[in-house]
Length: 148
Image (cartoon, rainbow, N blue to C red):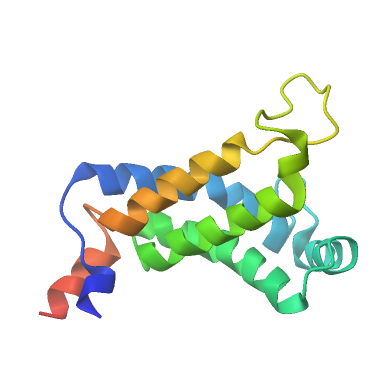
């Protein structure tokens, strides 16, 4: 159990997790709360289950993973679990929606949808956090210290 929370006091984990948490929070808030032009929990559930055909439990896990996972990353709480969740969510987004549109995001509005470059960045940052842990000023660090 200690290994799950274990981390070091380096700045890299802090920078990576807070940056990823801040970037992911608006996406999670769109899905959970309807903020930032999103459809909220009900609308997102409808889209995921009816239009994309996801099982309801997967749809719930995506919404919860993005919303609470981003907050957990910012606090450095359950960092490895949140990072692993985002990797799975981003792999799912690539395979279900973004792969056909190629690598690049739709910067010029000329594509039918968005590419997967953003998702690869999220996967890379989350993978680094999965390996290193939360870093400096994290709840995980405090939990690991108490497990000794």
